[in-house]
Image (cartoon, rainbow, N blue to C red; front, side):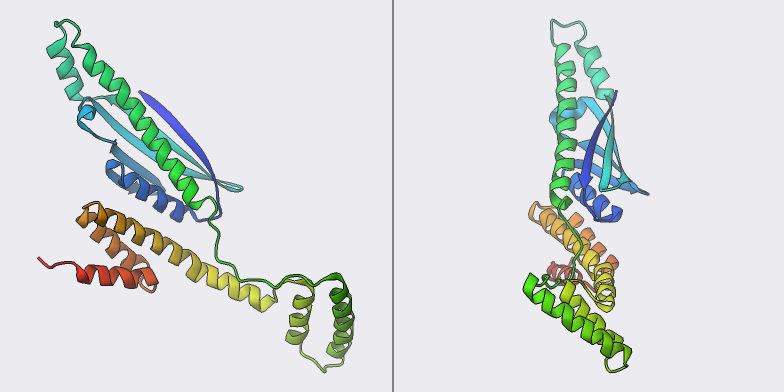
Length: 251
């Protein structure tokens, strides 16, 4: 049996950031999660005593669209070997053979709702996320704008006469129209690419590690902390991760 769950997520984060958020959510609900290129594979979603009679594998991929991503979860859900063993043992009883069938159908609903919850949590987490942007000056009021435009025209004449530099002229023009100068745009772009996204990804992994530690999964937490240090060595999260690892007991 196979069924599919889809979710459209409107965001401007990278595919790597999206997959990282999905992986973090899946690790809280699945027995195992592995990354295969741009796809995540999870097994044993919401496993419990009643799930002994089913086997499930969920493959999650993301397809870029204009305003974000379409996330698709293909769930392969089938009876386990124990399901057939229990059916055979109870086949000639009164109605006990119905019990494994009932558990099997109920567990399908459990898996479906868990995957939907993962996608919904990721959507809420990053749908409104945006890259760090430099604050821009507000446009001037109408009366001030008229005055400033007149000053800009005079400044243009000084520019042609060589009495002011091009940089000074661009700075005044940016102030009039409430826009960024070319230099500010380059600095903002560089800051976003080298700092904003990296820090955001690193912080997310660090927070996930804290959740694992609080829930008693010390080994998984340590693995995530080492991953933060390896992938984002210059981030604030990496500094916190080093301190957290140093504080753990040796042995």
